[in-house]
Each structure stands twice: as structure tokens, then as C-alpha cells.
Image (tube, rainbow, N blue to C red; front, side, top):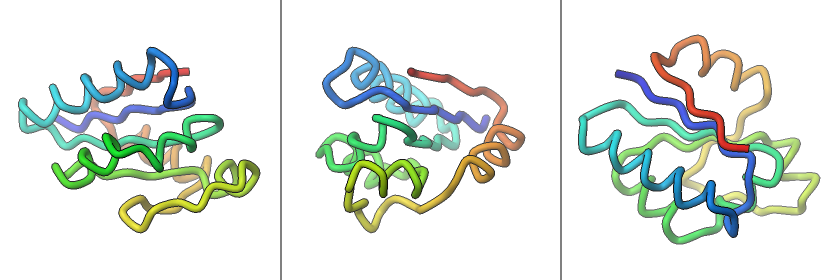
Length: 100
């Protein structure tokens, strides 16, 4: 199954821990897990736990415009995208979880 998590909350919110738990559960089930960071969720890109998810095979995307607005220097393990890219990811996913 293709699982997409859309993260729009900051890394200090309860949603951050929920995102990590959903992603790890998907990995255990052998799902193809992707996370799209947007709005204040782009702040999560610099968190160590997000790097661990990337190391575990989770595909990470972020809205380049939102990251630029917040002066975030995204890490190399995350792929630059856009709202159009998000719409394509949603169309390809079997399940979408929105955390905002």
C-alpha cells in the first residue's frame, strides 16, 4: 500500500509524534511511505527523527515555496516539490493522512 502523510504542523506539536508513529507503523507493514512537508511542517525537515525516517526508506518531499518563505535550508535527503507535486502524490496514494 502507498501511504502519504501530509505534515503541516511544526515539530513541537503533538502531530509530529503522530507522524513519526504512523510512518514507522507503515514501514513495519512494508508500505511505501511518503511524507510531504508544507507550511510550518517544513520546520520538521531539520529534525533528527525525520533523517532517521529517510534512512529507513521513507520518501520525503517538501514545498519549496513554503521552505523559502521560512528561510529553511532543506536537507539533501528530502526532495523539493510544490502544491502541484502534492496533488500528484495524493492521486497516487492509497491512503492519505493530513496532520495540520
